[in-house]
Image (cartoon, rainbow, N blue to C red; front, side):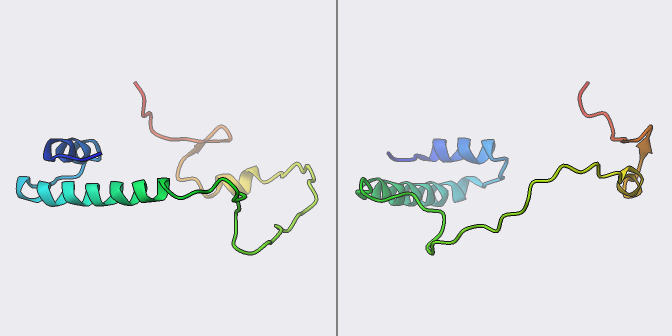
Length: 95
């Protein structure tokens, strides 16, 4: 797969990144370089490799799952810039 200048322009627009026209060929080249690396990774045979989350076999520390009331409403709301009726008050963002 090859990225042309128009595709690079579209990706920059979608990412809301201002890219000058003279920088688009370099950006397209970078995209092509990244895609080439991804194609190399796709060629690696990983059929017999188990998925792992760490290079060392470690187990996460476990804690007892206990339900608590919390009862910290006043302390939590003291951090709010605007609290009303026991809730955080935020500006309306959807009309």
